[in-house]
Length: 88
Image (cartoon, rainbow, N blue to C red; front, side):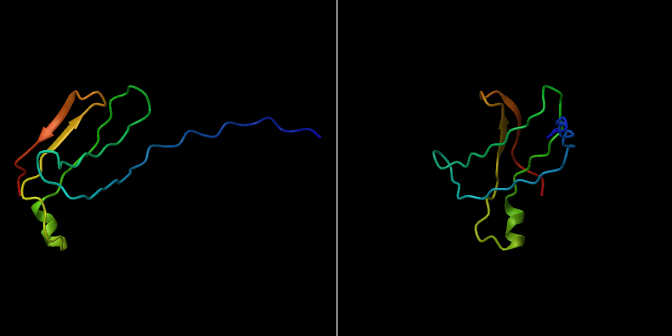
């Protein structure tokens, strides 16, 4: 029996992903920490990260955060971006 040569699969094209999480948060030690990993080398990429607070009441959430703060860091804790006091 002759087996044909193995052809490597074509690279997967870039695609848009939507990740979401929800949890109870407060202050001090009751913070919510979420994470994600971007693969694909050292090429710069644009991503959108957002934190929703008071507007979640419109979707029926009974106790949304009044003023969420978003802090994005590298895996070793180096700051990349931060936002507080979101415009309504």
